[in-house]
Length: 364
Image (cartoon, rainbow, N blue to C red; front, side, top):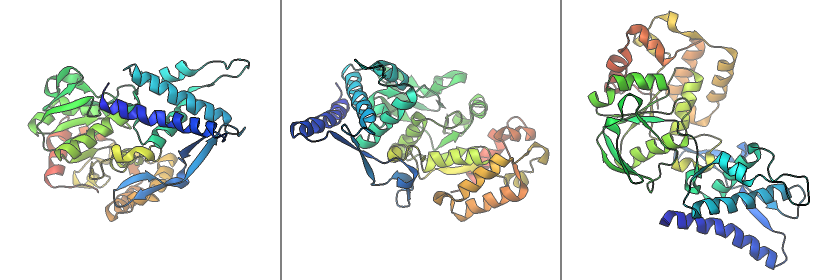
């Protein structure tokens, strides 16, 4: 068993040992957990990430309001320990079904739906300061990457420059004990919001011509893509340049890559990349690159509402972002990356992104 797995098991056993001591002292068995609500989340200016505060809550066995959640917490922790000891990796859906059963002598199930088990997993992640992947729980592979990179995935050697048109599928667990970099030859990572746009960059061999790595999360990126980008940034000093739509949703995706998400505030130090830069798209690019107005899309009510919410976020208070948001509201339009095809199929790969990088035309 890997040393890291032994450390994780020790943390899980700590939960059980604490409960056992409480029982031996005739105390009410209690689990203390971080509060994961919005009022316990803050933006740490020093690290540039969204973090969980110090507030905690108790889950007590002898409290009728807590007893079901207490039972579920103990069940999940025990099952995760079993999975790790089996040297297996399972999905959170697998875990839910493994634990779902009718409690003996009652008509009540341990879990009625996965909506009950998922938050318990997150509670354990937060309380033990571990990523889900370190608990041997995996999500579906989502992201894709290509570049002059060689790595070891378990017992397999992978060359990311020879993955063809489909690229390499980024696994959910990219921790150093699973994914070991052997060679990384690149000047930066281009983190692309959309799968279709990533495929344009890959087909045009952008990564080879511009000595970079191209990565996509296919929309809102998963933990694997974000963790991989952070590792490339920290371990190899590669800048992370983010390419998203010029709309509130694309810009929020950028902020998740950079500062982290509110929902995963308890693990953002292991996922966020505070030095990331927003390369585009912006509404100001319409004038700068003479993009025809007919390819813009009018902001709808949901866009306006989301934009207003983002204007209130502490991490969007820099002058450049205030100007971009003001321009978007004034023009009342948004823009998709695919709209650049109006200027030519390869305009985005041959002109737009190279010029943006050369001129260092970024938003912070």
